[in-house]
Figure 1: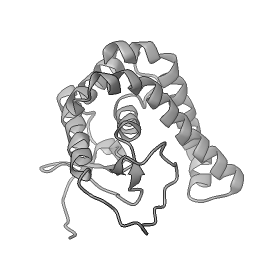
Figure 2: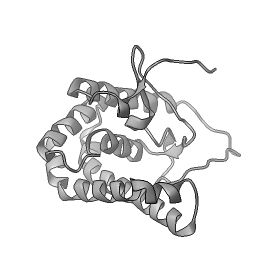
Figure 3: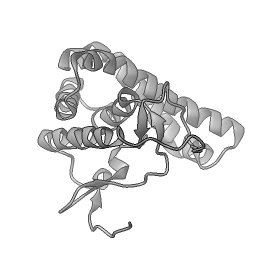
Figure 4: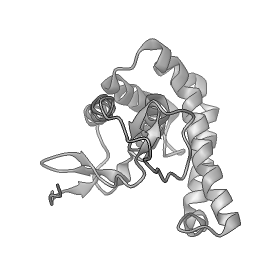
Length: 187
């Protein structure tokens, strides 16, 4: 079923409040929980730019502000990267994309944003402890995919790398790693 839903992409809207971030974390959790009942056919073919470390459930794999429509109704769009992954790998990407994408932001404020987002997801203590290192791994994986695609001339990633996405993900990776202990404490 397709439906037109009016709204604005979150990346183009006013910054999300902590209550909004909590809401988005809950949306990610609801997507993951709904996906647990789906069993793909044995001959399913998945196309994903960044392979996940395991196959726990089918995830969106790009739950980020550029794929969240906000307005009267909030919904994630652009499901072309959906593929088997893990809750942790998908959550790490979305938590980083929504709260730790601006390396110029005061890390203590970013930590509060991260806490609001993750609290909305309601992970267990084990997942909370793993999240900072997984965010670093996932952010580095994004940069490495863009870099390798640039080197190989694989589009659209090659052009994205030179159009600023490479620099963005390199800076984001450094920011996520530099403040790892602050993220862990916030969670």
